[in-house]
Image 1 (tube, helix red, strand yellow):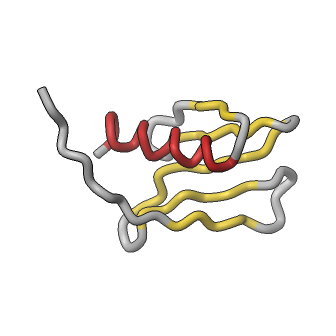
Image 2: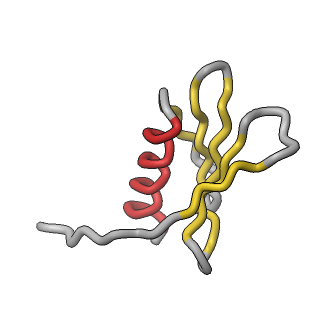
Length: 75
């Protein structure tokens, strides 16, 4: 079984005024797919739809994890 790869445009916006450094990952004109918070040197991504939590060691990895999860489970 092969799966067609597609490009998904996203925006990553830093949210100000939070206790932790926080970014929201958004598909423009559609919806938020998750929030990423920097906690004790690691990045914690929480999916918007199912509130699953994914940990990564970099912001880029965390964004990729959120996108992968969204593509596999939430589209």
